[in-house]
Image 1 (cartoon, each protein chain N blue to C red):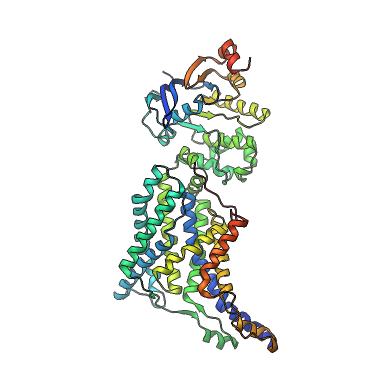
Image 2: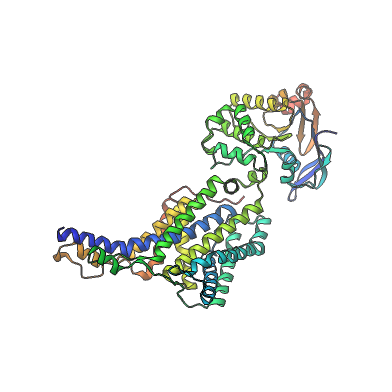
Length: 344
Length: 234
């Protein structure tokens, strides 16, 4: 191979390692969070501002349970103990969300409150949830991943391929993408093929007619919260395994998650996933420093001296905002036709 | 005692009174039609009969039992079915899924009932994989009707089934309704097209400001000069 073609391969290995793989896993994490928001929006008719902090709550349960499991030696070599803790955490998360529904949201459903009231209530739940997490685990950042960190590391990749640039596949990235794929397939199967899933779609489509068909609204709401617990706990855990756990970080995840949901078309599950990847790729593509990448591709005379970073990483949340504003200005219903809730 | 009857129903939306001691009844194998000007409370009667709106006084009796205290769901379980005037399908679901949702409460095999609906409305069989929102107004009305049939109800309440459809489709819908009645179902229908509806009705109610103004067989009402003048345009 010529040195130019090796340069091109090196450039793309670099991009894969620092942009594509991280964006794929970040996008998957956002997608799971966005699906939870979309589910709540379709069934309960409000935008759930507590989503980010709920993800922190679910992750907190995973951290508590997995550290107990580690202390008892209940681990499997190579597997993050956090994964083994998820089933137990799911039970806790479901109980928490159902309790919140019983204490807060059910009342507003009964009095047929407007959507904005649900939003306000969820902001309250957001603060309470965030408070509980900080009270129990503290506000500082921590890592809870154990087991094998890499499926293959940069060094192994380089030794195997002989390239100058290596690609590492982190266990957390591999798990994120795999589990997200499984969960999303499960959700679509559930909504399209099962009687309960269809009843949820029917309820989301036309609440009154669902009632007239004998669909029990309380049951639909409960199943929605169970699904939200599943997606929220897993999204939070995968994000934490990838980037570490910090309550504030999770709280701020609300922005890219909302951006994903709105970009995709609120209420549309496919849209939530597409939106999540769009937001994740924009964030990472725009904040990546392309200097090294360009050095591989450009002749010596054109080598950049600056970092060639379009936007500093400290502005990454602004990207979600800009995407949000553009979509709301140009196509408010999102890429996939979402539904706009009109209060009756 | 009639199969389904609402006796001296009084109801209001918030502080606005709608019904003042209004009574309607329908027997099995009978088609009763409620006509009257806009705002007379025609649809409200249906909502009260179905338990979607609580009456402040009066009672609803079904098959000899007082069901005034039952929820809408329980009334559906007892064999009542309702086709609302608008928003009467699940738009983002296929025709077949709409029918499946209609039979949601049934524990037995619903495929036979789905086939019966397809037999009644062959066009729905052709379009069974299409989303309801992609259908024409008349076809959507058939989906709505079919969905309500799925519980195999003994009484069917229809709120303006011919609103917004062409005259040809209207005739078709009326003939479907007569089929259902002839099969032994009790049918209570609210209609804007008073003349045509009373023509096929066994019994008619003219409602004005939430009160029974005239009651009689379809023929009697059509031939009643006062009804003709006020409600049927001469």
